[in-house]
Length: 72
Image 1 (cartoon, rainbow, N blue to C red):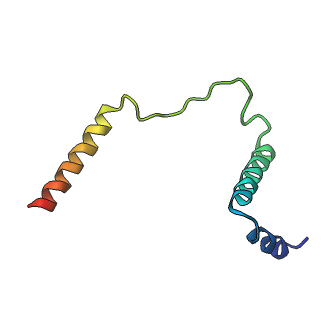
Image 2: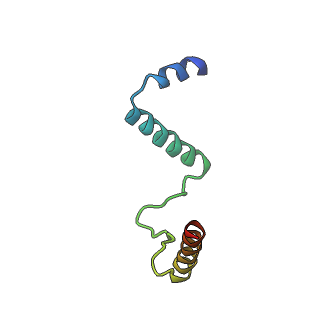
Image 3: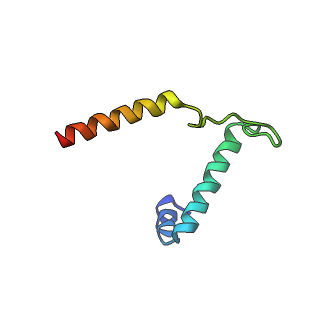
């Protein structure tokens, strides 16, 4: 099937089916890239904004500065 024809069919899909297609394609690309990209039952570190008080303080200072500029 030519890509142009496939793209026309994709445009007719519902939003949820398009999202499922994206998930499928992303999974397929990962499989082709590296079979051991994600290993079951293994922990992967994820950054979280929790306990990042310095970043929160910078954002609060910026917000306060913008609020002062707006008010006066």
